[in-house]
Image (cartoon, rainbow over all chains, first blue to last red; front, side, top):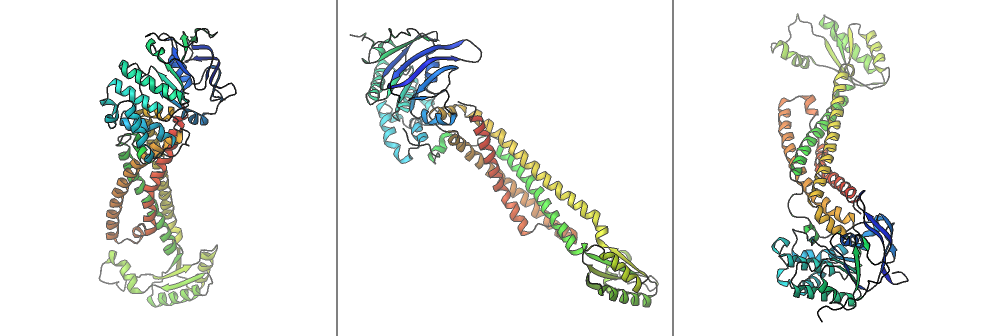
Length: 238
Length: 297
């Protein structure tokens, strides 16, 4: 962590796929350690591209990105896996491993991080119970509904207590009750110290976490670079 | 989640779906191993034959006494043998008995014995050290003692055969190397196909912080198992062929072909080939996969 307490720092970051126009332009912002952020914006605004930069699936075309206090743009490739293990990701399209059971999908980050098989049963079962899938532990993704797959993906993202949780539309396929429950899970993790950033279109979610801040992307740029639009959202259901 | 990365254990082996990774690869490796073992066996057999040829015949000189008169022929044979024994570079000297000469001629003139009016040369086997000028000194010494003698250097007439055996030996070694190259190419193709098939799983592992080496281990283990299966099938089939051929060669009773049989040490070398095949497959798979993963961020 750097001295200013920011876990993520973007400075004049641009991202271009191939030779096309920039998908993201001149992004400059910081996320403080332990913060809870919603990332909003219309479809095609670049939310998923921004999240990909955050979970180290892409490097920017220009600019500076500091993650956990270190410059990850010039960081040698061999050091990136260690950083990725500190980040939990909920992918928009779930990306579960199709031939693994729900249990094994959730256990995957722990296995990658070197947790012994004998130490997996308790945390994975607890996490599956938390997302309401205790009785579906041995089910393969193809036999799970869209909502169940999404819950497995979320359980997989948070099982390792990541320092940074990045979620791309994590409640898009679940009913409102489950969405709320999952948001509480993110909230609990956040209270334990995990920095959370959730990309969503769901305005109801924005109102559920009082201390959350909002980043709005529009056509690849933070729509209010001065920070005037970054505010704790007001509850819309009260 | 700050524990260090480690090797994936038994449970992680299921991260790739069960079953063969790349369809026909084990069978292609079985064919490669079959041909490799046969080529290696041919090389080893030819090397053995060449060594036996050199040891048993190459250093031997045959002296023929061509005199028509039997008494004169016998006397010159004794004189030539004595002259040969007097040279330091000469080892054993043996006048070939008449019965042995008759046995040598039997396939051509039958079993009736050598007729008195059919002059047959006396033969003397001389083991000569392979030193420069030794054959010339022997010729000079025997020429004085037995004017009717002719000295045949076996190494000279065996040279074309030895050259042919040497060329075939190198051809066999070249074939083995070609098979190794073809096997490596097969593994490269199989590893690339496996990477394409499991790209989704690899990307997930990669984004969760799996190192390239962790991912490569998953693939190299599976490819090694496929290579072991193919290698053993190919080796067993080739061994059956070699044993069958060995029986037929033994039935011929040929001294030269008998020398081409595979020694116990040669079998030891052949048995190691499947293990080397597995190691080669693992190494090639690892390098191929690490190179492909290196293209990811």
